[in-house]
Each structure stands twice: as C-alpha cells, then as structure tokens.
Image 1 (cartoon, rainbow, N blue to C red):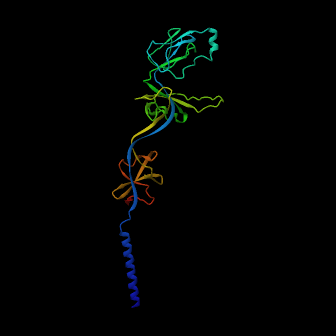
Image 2 (image 1 turned 60 degrees about the vertical axis):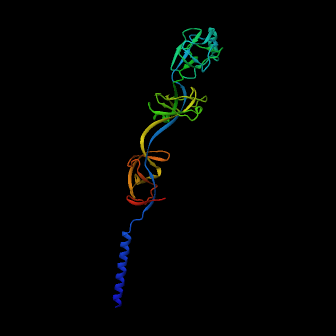
Image 3 (image 1 turned 45 degrees about the horizontal axis):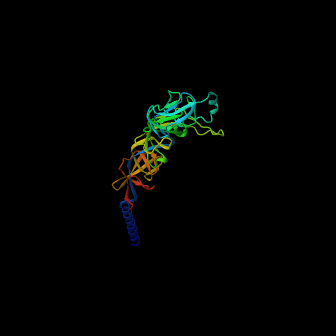
Length: 317
C-alpha cells in the first residue's frame, strides 16, 4: 500500500509539472517596450564651402592711348556715367621720365574686366560704356599707354570669383547651384550657379619662398536680388555638389546593424517587422534610406538587441 501511494504521488507530480510547462508555453509573449518615430521625406544635399570675392560680371577697362600725367579728374568711384562722358584729361609725360616713374604709375586695376579698350583720343579719357565707375586714377598720378587705369561696370550683374582648394576642386561641376553669403551683407543668402571652372590650379608664393596650397578658380554669376552686395566684398560660397530631392530619412537611432546588413524595425499593428535597408548620406541627425523603408512608415527608435522580427511591442510612454 505504501508503494501504491508513492506511485500516486509521483504520477501527480508529473502531471502537475506537465500542466505547468503547458501553461508557461501557452501564455501570450511578453511585449517589448519601445519608442517610436517615423520615416520622413526631405530634400538633402552634399556641399563644399569655398571663399571668393564679389565682382561685376560685365565691366570694361580703359587704357590711355599714350603715357601721361592725369591733369584733371571729373568723376569718382561710384559715379554713374554715360557712354562718351569725359572722365579725365591727361598732360604729356616726357619720354625720359616715363621709365623712371614706375613707382608713381597708377597700377593695373585690382579687379578683372570682361573687356579692355584703348582711348580714342590722346589726352582725353571718355567712358567707353555706360555704367558705374569702379576705379579711376587721381589727379597728378601717372598713367602708361596700354595699362588699364579706369574701370566701369554694370552693377546690375554681379558674380563671385571663388578659389577652391584642390581637395574640393574635383567635386565642382558647371551648372551646380550655390548659396552665397557675405558678412558685410548680414544674414541674407544669395543664389548663384557655377558658370566656369579653371582648367588649371595655381599656387601663390610668399616672400619667404613658401608655396601655398593649390587652388582652382570658379566663377559663379549671382541670380535674383543682389541688393546689399558690392564689388569687392568677401563672400562665402556653399556649392551643392550633389542633390537628392524627396529623399527618405530616419533618425540615426532607428538604424541598427546585425552582421553586415543594416536594418530598421517597422511597426505593423502591435508587431515589429525587421526591414533590411540600404543607407545613403548621414546628415546631422538623420540617415538617408535609399531602399527598404517608405516615407511615413512608423519605426522603432534604438531597437534593443533582443528585439526580433515579428516581436510583440508596446509603446513606452
């Protein structure tokens, strides 16, 4: 009888254990607490920033027909002139003093000009075109035949002549859009576009013989309203080297990597679905998704390593 009781107890224990195991296995899975975000859409770009100088896009430099001394000046920088207006008159400069006057000769213009013309009259310099006087010699200064001494420009057309470090030069292409800012013009942003890129790089030499970094020149005409800018202003140019319109983006913390593949956990009902993705640019706070997730999808932020495909989730308040 004792043996029979022992068998009953053992059987009861086995039955209870089986019931407990069945109950544990059949209970609903525990939900994983998660925080949610969303895939969004925005235009993104890659850019390089270079420095330049604002200048007139359309200007004309005037050279005297022969060397001489400026006798009288009738205009100042900033004056508006019409074609044919008298700008200054010259007196003759002795042949033997022309060479010795190198130190006082009014030097070549600091800005580049779209075209250079020579005065038609020996002792009178007239405006070759209508526009704004940018540079003009002072009374009593010497001018030399063939050396530009006056520049007139159309200030309605401005451009930036920028110097790109060789490191960025390969990323520049004609037609790329750019934003231009100038500290002298405040916070205003001006539109521009790359019109030309120099085929060669240049280096400058210091007085000590040290060579500077090679730079490549790019010219960017400004578009739209250019109020507030003046030729000679220093400018900062942000060139958009690559542009992705309507790109899908997610917060950095939504992307996880398991093995060699990157994933984003999307939310379908109360489940997390593991979606393999291909990523693009990493911006300041978001990552571009090239493939795998559509804009507007609900996604899990900072998915724990224990989160699996199809896992039950609940939003952590």
